[in-house]
Image 1 (cartoon, rainbow, N blue to C red):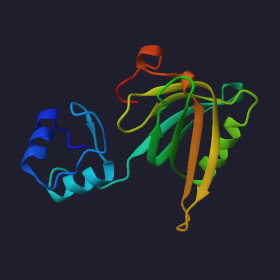
Image 2 (image 1 turned 45 degrees about the horizontal axis):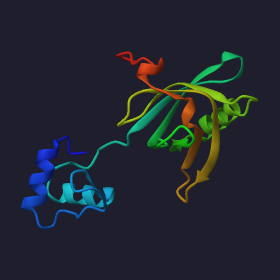
Image 3 (image 1 turned 90 degrees about the vertical axis):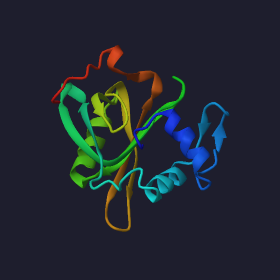
Length: 167
């Protein structure tokens, strides 16, 4: 988040009594509560509040090879730890995009994600069985869509989803 190395974090932990305590992990590889770390980084001017909401872009291939590009704002990507698990992607969408995405994924074999580009991860492809598992409308009227797929269907750059500059 702060784009610094491990040594900087070790120094912050030593020099700042208010640095958040680890919530898990090991002594060598501690894990921290993300909201607590973000609050600390903001309070100490180590990061700035993002101006715009990040977006994920996905190219979905449905029945009869119909391909559509979608944008999900404020994406949250959770990748399963093993191939038996399920990956999930949530993000804010328009009603029209959510309807079209659900229609593409409703086919007999589900849709495929030809390319998923999300902040903080390498581009991914999902080879079938992508489905919409939730549509949630917030009190402010925004529509949050959640997609899921078997983790074993995920492919990265080494598996055939090549990253191309400018795309």
